[in-house]
Image (tube, rainbow, N blue to C red):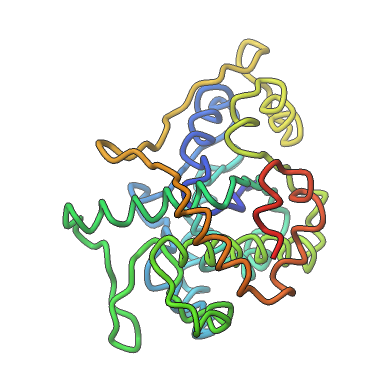
Length: 278
């Protein structure tokens, strides 16, 4: 069965992308954003993120066996999952279970991504969303949809008192390094289609090129730009001069090896790339 997964951070347009698939090519594929309501299909948020940090690959493999069985129920249709859990907990095991997978790489300005993620986490805690935290193997509580802060990259910032926004900047840098590592290590560049958000998600020609890349034909022969925007109700994200300064401090403390990927495509021509120059 053909499978398509997303290489993305949270707040990068994954839900809108799912809507584009549903609106245009649902006759040929089954679309899941974050499969909470798909019985037997683990989301791999929460504890699997910590399992990945600890190197407990068998715990993740047990969940991936369940995911594979759940996905195979829908053959021969193409299965599309736009969850940002892929790069957080199981990307490096994915080829074992889905060797012919295709990827959609969503890239959004790190400043706006981190500001939006921080705002979303604050709101989730403010409304006391159930199950927003999980307990790790060390007894500590972790936010279900974020990296743990124990990933090796965070050690570089021990002398920088990271606030929530800055932690999400570091997470964005780590996620994009994982994306490039995955594509390089498994020779998947030819199986990956890149979209810059939000501009490409609102471009019918670019979205049509994505569908053609995946061998999917839009209903009616044309692309309709329509999907659900994952907005934060009553708490719009605002980017301030303070955010720019906080990002600058993170980039200045980031080891060069984590910034090297931004000297190549698909990053080096992005309009925001100068923000990642230390």
